[in-house]
Image 1 (cartoon, rainbow, N blue to C red):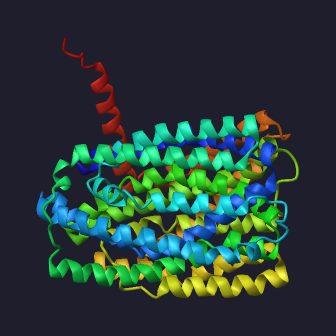
Image 2 (cartoon, rainbow, N blue to C red; image 1 turned 90 degrees about the horizontal axis):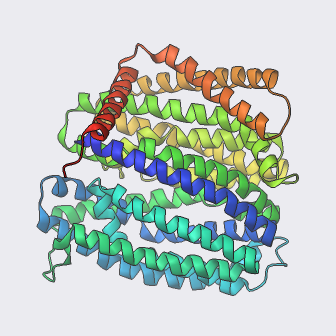
Length: 515
């Protein structure tokens, strides 16, 4: 049952993301042609500035989702209702706090925008971002319930419809008016409708949560929540300092236009991560259930499968990005939207380091291990800020990304595996780093080999050459990895799961429907 739900989550999410990615590239092209790179920079900057609001949430959502796994699996409805009611109450308070913090941040906005004088109506723009941020809290308690119950695919279907509607509407607004305010307004109003619609779906699927009877969370769960929220608050601060400050630093020390140029790179890497996410994230809820019900040996065997998938997917992605990302930007947007090559290399290094944490972080989070390294992300964030501020003076833009790599390698790169291997698997952590080193070396060697073949066989920078490079990048790495891992237990398991689900799909199509 766990495997089937994971497969369903994965395939529906991938299908959704493919459509959204295609529309996203069209939308970005229209945005740049209509408004220019400065407005694109503002879009990226405000997204980062307001991501600070996530610090207010403090990890409450993740902690409650963790506590929902067991009562949902055992059908303890009173405990589920109690947690959902608590979550709803907390998020009403957080929405108000978010508004107050946003008001306090507003006076400092102009100081964060170097060479951003051409941006008009910045006050309206800022508070439209704030309003959308607050709306996201209104049904957050319902999203946690449906995701913990491994039914996220139900909401994904609706999200696909609304994201397509929103993107098409924004494209039409830009083509007709070239007005950024209207662009944000249409996005905001459709987002409100989406939240209402999704809320109705969850209410129908879990009608028992609409009860007027008040339930209280037991003391043990409350204490667990308090500990986890405190720890996750520090995790969130560290996470923001690492991943949420790049655009702020670029805007403050380089220029708002450079934020726009960099955002084209992050758009592609984030879209790729969104496609990758379901492949690994689809097993997330299943891992929570697995840890709650299975032995340590079973958990470790599943982790090795997830880690192989993690490596394979991110290794292939890095090779693909290295050979195709910048040629694609040139073909897609034209000249003048590329960063220097050294900066590009460090963007890819950070993408790989962050992506390769997915499997170990999934097991850590789903096991509820938030307290054990509560200070590590905070240290990571401080290291990132300090090194980024120092290195940007000597190396310019690349210094920001060098700081990010240094902070990751010096903290969570090793703290997360240590915690999981000690507390979940009871295994020596050197096994993880041995496997990680092997995977990293394979990635570098395969990337160099693939690049050499691409440069030898493919000439030119047009769309056909992009397709040919893509074919080389698809065939070479995957062929190498199939040869290397074909006899491993992990690969055989993945292959069997794929075969069995393809067989089920074919069989279901062949069964005639009853009249």
